[in-house]
Length: 128
Image (cartoon, rainbow, N blue to C red; front, side, top):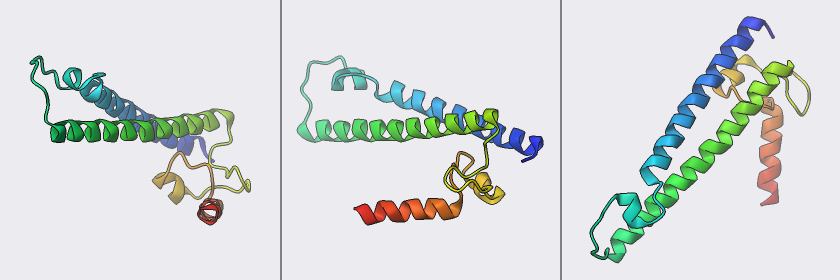
């Protein structure tokens, strides 16, 4: 892979990483309180209706799931950046063939070519 291509993918990965970390910070700030009162900023001593508590719990759970997915994606981006530094970026980790540019453009943190990724997904589906 050419150096100019590597620079382009590195920039893509770094931009996505920055965006994800910014979003994760927003989610943590918005839903970071440890209790319902702290999370909402409410200082009153009135009790909450069960439906309100349920809604808040669901929103906090959703925020946690989004942060968790984003955290995993940041890990995969970091691994792709490591592969760029090592010189192994763009090579399938299963078969060793070059990953197509169209796949890397769509999924710049891809570690498998489309054939190996399809096989991996089929394997996962077969185990369920």
